[in-house]
Length: 151
Image 1 (cartoon, one colour):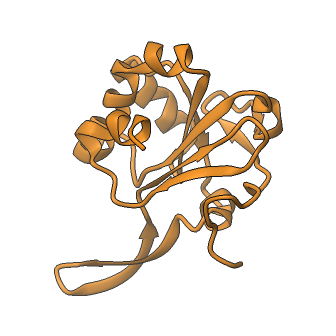
Image 2 (image 1 turned 90 degrees about the vertical axis):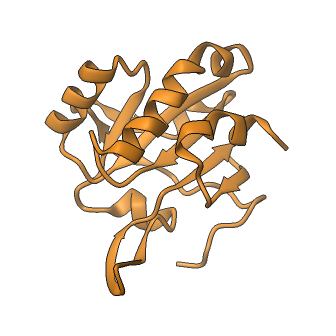
């Protein structure tokens, strides 16, 4: 699949959230969506990122955004993560990595000189019509909201 670029139509999503409910990108048509991909529930960087988005959630809503997170964690793990950190947004459980792959958020990573496949932390801002408006590939976990709001 070719790499997504700003201005591209965002790939369709049909997946399950933390409660096993179907979630589609189409249901957000007419609103902007912050679609953030993160490696793992309850890890330091992922928790910082999710909590920064939580702390700025009312600002996102005021500006017409919805927030949806995606990782390969289970629905149960997501429910625990949401409860522990009082996250007000939905989290997609993608253990088969379909959404991750469709959005280029599954790929080669390096750690301590070793190369392996894993989830790439990145965020897509999708406009009201379903097009990619912004891509953030160098996520600052503790200041992610400001990255999204800045031009």
